[in-house]
Image 1 (cartoon, rainbow, N blue to C red):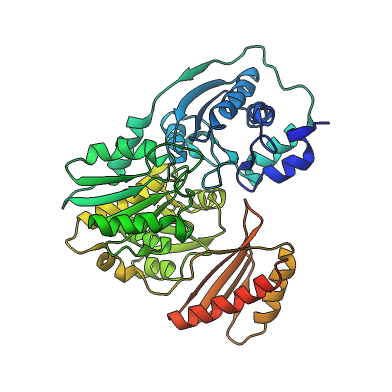
Image 2 (spheres, rainbow, N blue to C red):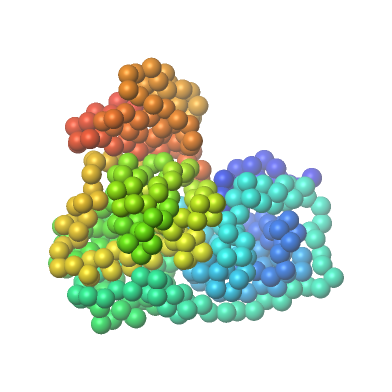
Length: 460
C-alpha cells in the first residue's frame, strides 16, 4: 500500500475533478509527481508526451520527476520548459502529443499542480482517465519499468505559439495603447512573444512581467477585484484603450475598459461568440451555467445555438467535441476555441478583444454596451464547512416560490424571470461560490444579499 503523498487519503485530496493540485511537499512532492508520470503512461498507453511548467519555484523539479517516471515507463518526453498552460495545449496540438502542465494556476505560491491531456489537448479529467491514474498511484508497488527507457529532448514552441494565435485573431485597424498585467505569472513569458509581432499595431504597457512564483505584487487571480486595482489605475494613468489581466498560468483573461471599469467575462464571452458566429453563422456556442443569461440570448439572436454545460474545462471541451461547437466561454474567464484544439487560451481571448476594438473608432465601453444586459454580482466565495446543509437550506428557501425553477447540473441553480443565481462548491478549494444577476441593480443586490445571508449563516 502506498504511503505519504501517494497514500489513498492524500490522493483523494489532491486529485480534483480535472487536475491534480495541492500544497507543495505536504501534498504534492517529487515522489507523487514521479508516480503520476509513470501511471499516466501506463494507464493511457502513452508512448511519447510533452511537458511544460510555470514559474513557481517547485515547478521544474516536479516536472523533472514526472518526466523521470514517464521515461522509466518507456515514454519519450519533449520538454518545452517555461510555458503558459495554453502554450502547453498548443504544443500538444501542434506536435500531436499528449501532455502535462505543471501549474497551480491562480492558487497561492505554496501550491502546485498537474494538468494532463491526451494528444490534441483532449482533456484528462476524473471521468476520462484521471481516476484510473489516481487509483494506479494509490495501489503502490514498483513503478512500471519498460524494457527501453524513454528519451528526454527539448523543443521551444513559443514563437510558433505566438504566430498561431495571431493567425486565428489578427489585429488590424487603428493603433491601440494596451496595458497588460501579467501578475508575475506566465503571461510575462508569452505576452512579449505575441506583442512583439504587433509592434506597429499596439503600444504595450507591461505590468509585473517578471516571472516570480512568490507573486510579490498581488495574487495572479484576476477574478478577485482587489487583484485588478493596479491595472485599473494604470489604464487611467496611461490613457490606455484597454487593460488585460491574465492569471498565473495565463489561461484566463479579464478586461478593464478605458474608464478603468471591470468588464464581466460574460460580456467578453458574448463579444467573442458574436465574432465567431460572424465567421460561421449558425454554429454552436457553449456557455457554462454561471455565465450571464445574456450570452445564450445573444447567441440565439445571432442565429447560433447556445448549449449550457457544467463548470470546468474537461466538461466544456467534451461538450464542444460532442456538439462541434465553434467557441465556449466560462464566467470564470476561460475561453475555448474549436480552432485551438477546443482548448482555452487567455491570450487568444485577449487578441479577439483587441481585434474587435481596433476595427472600430469607439471606446471599449461603447463597443461592449450591446453585450451587457444584466447587472452581475461577480463570483463571491465563502468558506463553508457543511456545504450540503447550506445548499439544502437555499433550496428550501427558494424551491416553492412562484415562478422559480431549480436545477442541479452543477451545484444549485435557481432561476426567475427577473433574476438568477448559482451556488456551487469549488473543485479546487473549500469554498462555496455564488454568482447572481438581476434585471436591474436593485434586484441583483437584493437576491445576492439574501443568498449570502443563508450561505454565511451556515458557515462555521
